[in-house]
Structures are given as C-alpha cells and as structure tokens.
Length: 332
Ligand SMILES: C[S@@+](CC[C@H](N)C(=O)[O-])C[C@H]1O[C@@H](n2cnc3c(N)ncnc32)[C@H](O)[C@@H]1O
Image 1: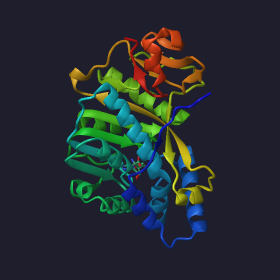
Image 2 (image 1 turned 120 degrees about the vertical axis):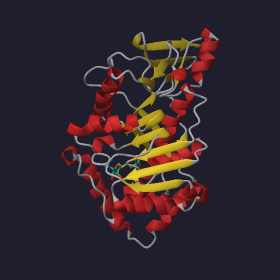
Image 3 (image 1 turned 135 degrees about the vertical axis):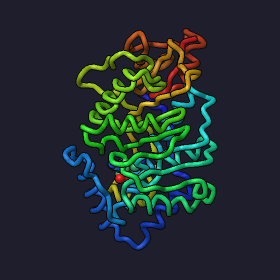
C-alpha cells in the first residue's frame, strides 16, 4: 500500500527557541523526565491532576509534544478551511494553551490580530510566552492569562476558540460545564482537538452528542449528525506526520526522523452561511492505492462504506487520486 503523507514541521525560529531551552541539560535527564511525563499522561486515573509544574518538565514537554500538537492543530485547520474557505478569524482564544503550540499553528494560517492564551500552570505560561519572543509580531499580539477553566470565567470571546489536548484533563463531572464555556466564548468557530485514542474519541463523542442536542453546527469531521456508525471496538481518528529534530530523537530514543501523531477533533461553526454540502464524504483511513484503482473508506450521510474508484471512472478518479486520509470531497 502506498501512503500519501506530508511531513509537517514547527516554524524554524520556534524549533530553535525550544532547543535553546534545553541547552546544558543532560540527555539522560531529558529522557527520564520525558518518560515521567509519558507515565503521567498515560494514566487515566491522573485525569484532572496531570500537572506539569516544574520548569524542566515544561521544557521537555515543549520539546517532545509541541511538534505533534502543532501538526495536529495545523491539520485540523486545513480541514476546517476546506469546508469554510472564507474563514478568517481576527481574534483567538487558546484555552489550556500549554506552551502555545496550537496558537503557533493558527498564527501560521490566519491573519490574527489579537490572541489570548489561557493556562492554569505558571511554568507553562512562562515558557509559552518566552518561546513566542522569537516572533516579535506574534508576541506583540498575544496575551497570556492565568485561568483555571473549571473555576474561572473567561471574560473574553473570540472569532476562533481552540481547546487542544485539554478536555482529557478535565474530570468527567465538569466536562460539559467546560464545554459550555468554550461555546459561550466562541463568536464564530470552535475547534476541539484530542488524542486519537479510544479515550480521546469517546470524550469527543460525548461532546458531539451534547453540542448536536444544543442545535450547534458541527462542520468537521462528521458529514452527518446521526450517532457515529463505527463498530463499538473502533474509533475515528486522523493522523499527521511531523518531523523529529535531533534532540527529539534523543529524548524519545527514536530511530526515524519523523513521528505520526494520531488525533481526533470536532469543529463547530456558529455562522449559518458555513453549512457543509449534504453529499460530503470524509476519508477515514489511509486510501488503499493499487495500479489504476483506489479504495476509500468513507464516512457520509448515507453511511460508512468502502468505495472503489478506477482509472476508467475519469474525472472522479483524478479527483480522489489527490486525496489523503482525513480529506473530504463530493463526487460532483
Ligand atoms: C496536554 S496540554 C496541551 C497544551 C496545548 N493546548 C497544546 O495542544 O499543546 C494540556 C494543558 O491544559 C492545561 N489545563 C488542564 N486543566 C486545566 C484547567 N482546569 N484550567 C486551565 N488549564 C488547564 C494544562 O495545564 C496543560 O497546559
């Protein structure tokens, strides 16, 4: 099978700024802190208590996770603009911003004039804000504010609201209360990104059902508003490939110069004009490509199906040939 995959990378200055933070730290220490972070995040029982509050933890977090979360959010923004090509937010709220990877992704894509990063942990805010100093324009238009999304009100609204890799840290009994705050803060579009795991998918399916019942317009990834039709032991997710720097390879004790980040997301638009076409198809696995034919796993309003496109199908074959896992298309 041939996989069509682009390799994404952090902006050069950000990558250097992160590497500068690690200068002078021993590789063995970086590896052991990274393992500690993985353990903390790998434990479901730690929900609500996955705090990274030591400077070294946030530095290692930035080095290890920012490329992947930047890649995942950038991919989601591409999927959103496929559906809403005119979406051009001026203001953004990044909620549970961590060290700012999602903001960096949105800033590359849109002409943002005013960004607010809300984050509970002091060390995350300090490092996120410091890393942004390598881009004076971004730094000038970004404000970092200490907020706990469970306890505090946001006091701000924005055209684009992002919550990336945060909801899995929110205890179940207050999840929907936090979702209400995200929706309330959104003038136009809300993007929620979570890990592409069974748990990330399950959180997003709970949120999806809640938002659909509230009458909100899910613009991506789902082409329909029925219950997800995947089998009980399956979960919808997408993937992006991100470049691994030398230091990333050292910290993760990895051989290959890239990693595949699996993620799941939900995008909601409050603007009526952005309704997606009824006959939209979403590609939910890597296309299976053979000589002169392509098989796509598709989610659509008609159901989930495998569809075979042959070279002799002409224009539609040419169209689907360019598509990847996660892309959407119509057959017209
Ligand atoms: C895994 S990190 C993701 C950071 C960033 N959004 C990204 O995608 O790179 C989760 C972040 O959510 C923050 N967070 C978790 N619970 C929070 C809360 N109750 N209020 C504010 N921030 C919170 C954590 O401190 C952490 O920085």
